[in-house]
Image (cartoon, rainbow, N blue to C red; front, side):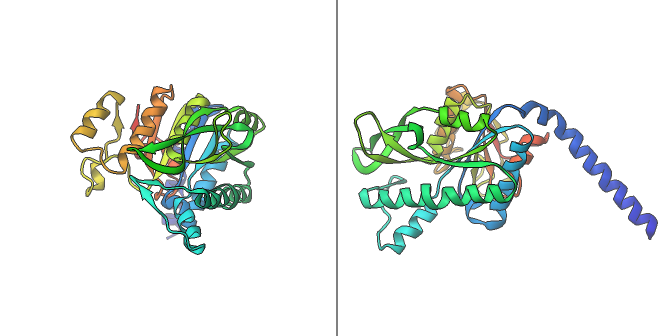
Length: 296
């Protein structure tokens, strides 16, 4: 019995040694590089997954990876709007944002969620600072219309001024960014920005080495009903064909489009990974097998 226990411990040690040996070249590869993570979906709602993501980010930061976290918060915004008796309205997947709704968006994103995430990172031993797109003029935006329909104070990013992020990274902080943006010069409005798109454009401005979207699906699937049909690698030139034949469809299209924005802007690797898998970020960055779909 004692011999069996010792053999079990030996196998465990061998296993962990193998994991560390496999991770070492990846650790060397990512130290000093910028990685932008878009955080949302189930990983943001489930408490256990939330803590797992925070641990991953703190570990990356501790070993010298310059990690930047950009977060959304749609479900929390919906909840707060319900509390104040305001109906959530969407046009082609984008939230109609009048002035009252914009007040709620700012309160939830830059006040509640941003500070909650910073607090969790601090509890896990990390160094983090909360920012919004308004701080230091980080994000500038202009009003958009979707198919000629007025969406209110919904904007698209026209400028990214990343100096505040770069300053925080140099000081060893994890910048946590909520996507509320200032209007362009002369426009005093603040705009509700799609967090996926904002994260992609921030990755471009920072010349990031990697852009990762944590989602509620395994990645791009050949068959939506079969998780084992995951497409692990997609070269950028094949994306239009995959959209045309329906392989990339529905809510996956805007996520892939954000990857395309990053790739065209010079980010060499973009990933769509399953935020429902604990420590999916570490598996992607520090193992041979990776996880999710890489667009390159």
